[in-house]
Image (cartoon, helix red, strand yellow):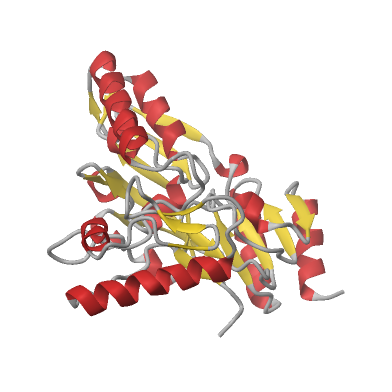
Length: 305
């Protein structure tokens, strides 16, 4: 039995879903991505602590997915296993003004849970199409808010040993689109989110206001990975891209959105090569005309060197 099969059999014994040769375009918000050897839907913390160290021990390549909202995946597929944090790791409980949420809980579900409890402070995350694990990993933010402002502690697991450690907000080393986890490789299992008591009507109004801003200013009608480039120091990627006349530039079905130039969108059947070519065109043009080097925000997943 090869390593992948062994991990898949162990996953089934732990109640996880296992899909062989699954198309990853069905699991990314860009709707781009070829097949992986197996996609395993993790089911509870025990499955994380057993299966990921097992893959490490057997030298099986693997990736961690949430909702696939900050990923660019090769259309030719990738070798190995995708471990997916979702409903099986999405538990949410509360203790006074602190939410304790699994890494697979979506930000929208967390915001709605906070609203039910009359807790304020995480409204900025309403509508961000990702899970808590991914949001903590990259210190996601919007409209003046960031995860570091509300995270109290994070529970994370060593990939090789399965050992769990709890980190305080300071130990998480949060900065713009960065945390200790982007470098350490530890797997985020859950987090405590500290909020403040608020008025439910005011919280709901704020959530609705921010969602309307997203709908009016962002191309939510098309698949994308959100902002394609990180904010460069002293400016905004969308401003530089627009100033360089790149709005509407396209390669195949990959296009710089005419609604918000910070987004590259999939207008239909864009593939990985078209997307990467367009990203390179944008980066080269912006560097040539402004001297600014744009950095891609989504993680790029490919077997190609």
